[in-house]
Length: 271
Image (cartoon, rainbow, N blue to C red):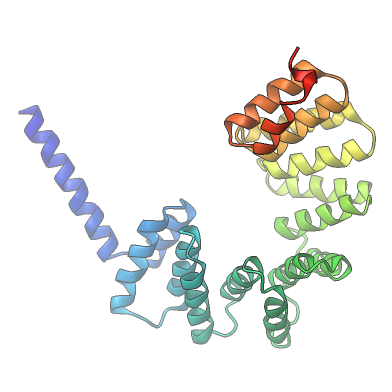
């Protein structure tokens, strides 16, 4: 009897899943994207578009789903279709620019973003995207200027503030970088990458103990955040703490780091 009920439960779950996909709302699609359930999001978008092909939000989410599934060509097409329906749809504009930039077409991304900014001149997301595209081209001055403008337009925009801080660390504007990273953490304290960047700033400030605390905080937020694990291992090695360095290089290797694997070949770790 228990087996029969178990089978019925499975069937009901499958039927419920099919119903959710065929009758998915925009909110359902959004939830699937937030959960990074890209196959479900894609299927929901396709089912929705069989009934309504005029919703730019669904096309944008379809682009997100294709991007999550590593299909940049269809992601680009979906974002551009969303823009065709709503030329002022900033999230789709940014998505399209990101695909172009990551595909080696940063110049085209810049051209498109600048064209749109003639119609939407003071938008923090567009300035942040433009900053990323300029950085991809190696134009750090324009990149930093756009990140700064994005933060000025929206002081609560964490991505832009983080991007600005990274540029400031590279330029050794360390106190400004730390202030921006602290502000980003005020918005959301569970950001492993932000703690990692702040630790790097303290490395350059020659404050190794504070850097160590922040690398460890980054890893406590996300135990699989590889950049912080690798950075902490190198930090320990640089400061002569070989046993601790070896421990974190080994953690990095387990997460697939070839760099850490090569570092462990050094004779100092063979003792």
